Length: 253
Ligand code: 1GP
Image (cartoon, rainbow, N blue to C red):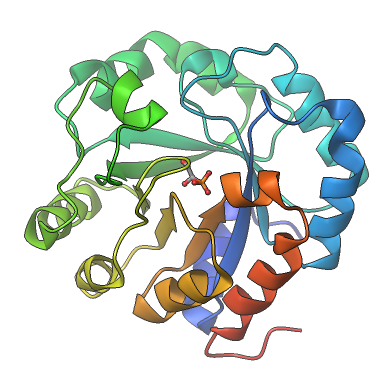
């Protein structure tokens, strides 16, 4: 019986399994070109496919989600930069609140406006405390969000923000240096946060090397998200999958 995406995330965390999420940006992935990507995701045992982005200008997000769902069993999670990216054809919605920022629209405003549409979608809703960490240069998310990222060396701010998110009832934390970040989040910050929360921790932004993905897992990340590096070189999917899964404390078949 399918108990839902969040149930699988929790079960994996309990087992010590580290998971790999591939971020698919609809602006960069045409439906007609998705076959190779999907085949490689299946081959690398990718655990989740995230679809969305801070700014999506193309209009085929829904077609892309439908196509991925038709071609594979990997759960598709929407990672929306705005309510216009909500489609009922995915498995779940990362219901993001930008808790690292002080922009009320991204903390609660857009959620209020879009609540009826989100409810009607029937999607599994996974409330997610979204924390943007400075990645060494402005990224789309840092610009579009109109909110300061957490400074990369201020671990205590990251820890307190994640703790507050957990105590507010958020079901997971997503720490993101932003897509294509020059500098990914340091392991020391990941470790500091991971040891102070009990909910799953997702980490992404600027991860280019399998070794970095492995170290992030060892530091306490439960799910590693990779987008840009894979867009540039699809063969990285296999290596990233091996690195992430090999860091699990259980054997992953
Ligand atoms: C961005 O965390 C994701 O929101 C992935 O980042 O595209 O840099 O891998 P990259």
